[in-house]
Image (cartoon, rainbow, N blue to C red):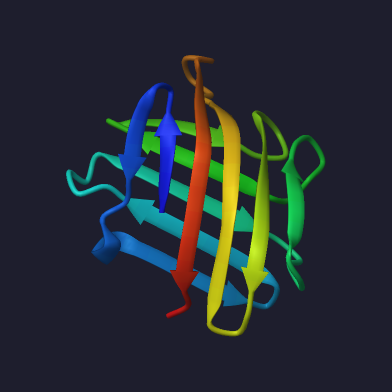
Length: 121
């Protein structure tokens, strides 16, 4: 799992990535080696590969936890897309881009060029 946060390259520690695909909900999360940056993705009603929008009225979400601050893209705030290119019983691959909003400070943080390739626990 990797991405660009603002202008900084980010890569999850391979031992700190978790993924589940249960009841049509795909959840993928990863934390970096310093344990200070976490990215979580959640797609609802996923039955086959495709692209979902993170926007008002949509159930999908993405979250960035960076140095104690939370930036979220949900059906309430922020925007983004998650594309799942491969989805099997044991594996998911895809890309993601989102703009998360911190609900306290109203600051926005952009996550681009995101990639994931995970196996399910």
